[in-house]
Amino acid sequence: MERKVRVRFAPSPTGPLHIGGVRTALYNYLFARQHGGDMILRIEDTDSQRFVPGAEDYINESLAWLGIGIDEGVREGGEYGPYKQSERRDIYREHVKMLLDAGKAYIAFDTPAELEQARAATPNFQYDASTRGGMRNSLSLPADEVKRLIDGGEKYVVRFKIEPGRDVVVNDLIRGKVTINSSILDDKVLYKSADDLPTYHLANIVDDHLMKVSHVIRGEEWLPSAPLHVLLYEAFGWADTMPDFVHLPLLLKPDGKGKLSKRDGDRLGFPVFPLEWHDPKSGEISSGYRERGYLPQAVVNFLALLGWNPGDDTEIMDMQQLIEKFSLDHCSRSGARFDFEKGKWFNHKYLQELSDAELAQMFKPVLEANGVDPNAFDDEYIARAVGLVKGRINFVSDLWEQSRFFFVEPTSYDEKAVRKRWSEDMPRIMGELIEVLKGLDDFSSAAAEPVVLAWIADKGYHLGNVMNAFRLTVVGECKGPHMFDITELLGCDETVRRINNGIDRIKA
Ligand code: GLU
Image (cartoon, rainbow, N blue to C red; front, side, top):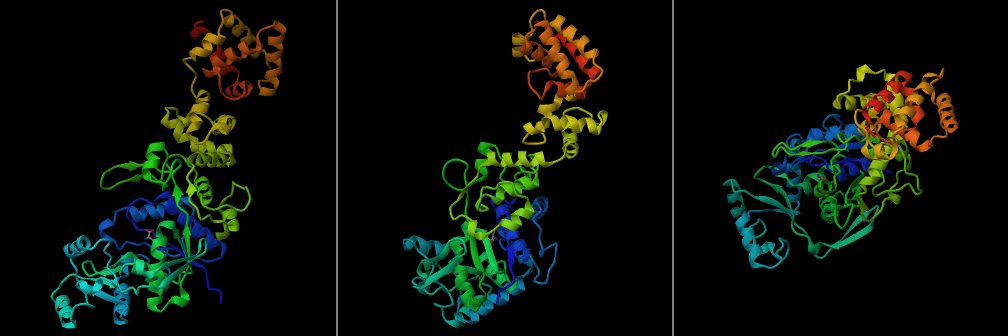
């Protein structure tokens, strides 16, 4: 019988969610939606040492911003809760006992100093079948001694008793069968009496089983843990319902070798976190995609293609299309290079899909930040200005550089352009241009352009010099959209005023 697809994203709240973690969440979500399955968000907070306040909220906010929906979780509820591991202590305690009773796990009392000593005495020491007999645990000590120690409040851990010499097969849907020999595994700690909490391995397996997870989709860094997880499933007698494993390829540095890190982002100037993060301890602020001006759809599309492709060269896909096209068959095994220039390109593309009116609304805070009161302009005017320059932007904030002259008159003029274009007779020629413009009945781009060009030709003026001088007075520099589109939006009065001011201010 085909079982229902149930996947989980299981972050540990130890800091801001890394962009690689976001991709893991996204792939889980796409897979769940495609199969009509369930997406679980489980908070794996059993490592009390590494708990960071605010990290859980950050995870929720990030996923919500990106449109990665959760069906079951701490906030959403669900029939397999609680969804936060620190609230499931009873469940883990009970499962630790099951393993102890079955002889699949044992209690160990070794102190950190004793472990250190063992490591120093034996090269490549590993706590396993070959060494456990010489350590202080319930396999080496008499039963009454074990009882005495526990009753006396001695701190202990529970270790998984790994049988050596077995081939353990992890069935990975991207990588195929990955086989390793159990002799290289150590007797992993599953539970610590000191804080009455399980370790990641035990809690993860117990929860995946109890929450009926069908597919474990997670980053490649967890592949080394997978054989242990397979053995744990077997030890509990759950081998029949073991989930399928999918270990996603690493995100690699934009340049050079190795895994993408926060330092790469700092060094090359791009965020590695979805949202800005304020570190509660150090006060350090790390930039986020949202605050940098990325659209969530662009981030989703960009991340979806880091490790997966649709089988053809389609690049722009919204969430719905991604859900339809996603498949594990087209996930790559090798690492995906993080190309942040491509990320900008996606943002550019998605910005072009927005209407001018929508962009104008997003632009208003930027205007304000630059000292322009957006209420002094019609929405229609702002939208038209935005429409003329949006093809040149990667971020909403770029709109300012591209369109500022629609909102503030230039008071200084690009010197190089002045030297090149502003000859001694330019004030006179600009004076004539003013008369030509004033004589127009229709100031639209289509109507004004032929008249002005005819006047230039008629007088035998140099087209490039006159048009660039004209642009200098209106824009302040020799760039921007089509000149007559600019003047159409500014209107005749404002255009004429700027030319007059230019004549006064620009010294040849
Ligand atoms: N808590 C682990 C993490 O932080 C979960 C790994 C897994 O998905 O099994 O990524």
